[in-house]
Length: 113
Image (cartoon, rainbow, N blue to C red):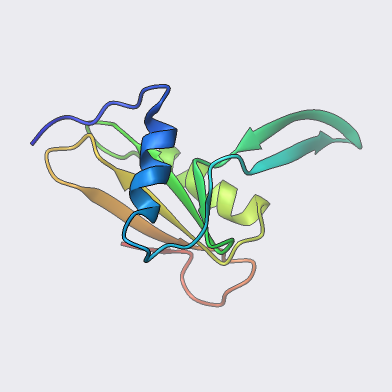
């Protein structure tokens, strides 16, 4: 299996790939969220992809997913106020993924493996 390594133009490649079969109608790779601290704008963050304006997709290319990556993806789901997200890692010897639920919106577990 080829090791996946994120590069600058990968965002465009993934956007094109996700929409080719017609299963996904809309995908946004420029979905920004403003960050505020004590009422002051301190920056922005961007999820890798937002699919159908319903699911945040966070892509990784790591040897193994760690808790910090799961926390980042969960933070995006909560901050963007989406019900669910998907964390995908292409860097391991086999595909790793986690489906993440927003515990502030759902009574289900916040993470399903």
